[in-house]
Image (cartoon, rainbow, N blue to C red; front, top):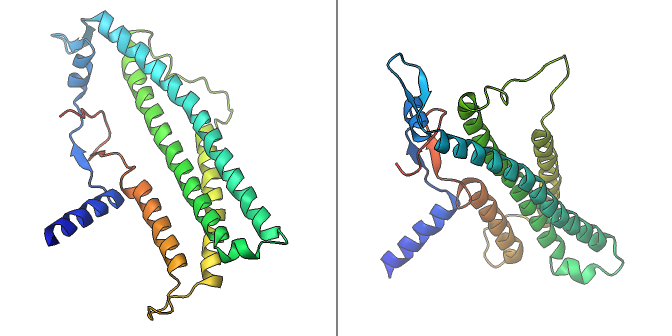
Length: 239
């Protein structure tokens, strides 16, 4: 029984703080060989399998475009929920008959949901951007052998290049700060730490623990990918 509780506790902790696996970055020669490009006697890269190279390049473009399309679909999904939660909170706080709802802590639940959805939105954007950059890196490496360095060659005429995804990340962080301020204000006004178990506000304490647990799980645990390396480059997740 003791061992069973210990293993369950260990599993729970692993969901909140995930242990990541360190991979070795692929050598460029190994990477290119996987897509039909090898070095000849002079040390220059030469295409030996145009079919696999062309398919890989095309698939990289398709997956990149897919991630960009899904980026905006996911943003709309989270915006819808966040606006709905925010509207529900404002309606609750401004209603003339909100005493019973506040007694049930519905305002706290809405604030916690808004905070968690905002954190999830930010992390989903970061994840989507990472996968987009993954496919763009493949394009950068493979395009020289197919279309020349078109994608990575940029025409500059003094104009400023703004990142649409980074602007959205900043907005998401702003929304997180707004919900976090609501969350902090609620607990500073309605909740105090007490060592007397008879006086503990279990409802507010449990809500705080669950919110913190889900936020930590999204940022450091279950939702975090297992891949990491000591340097930048391509990884073979089968190795």
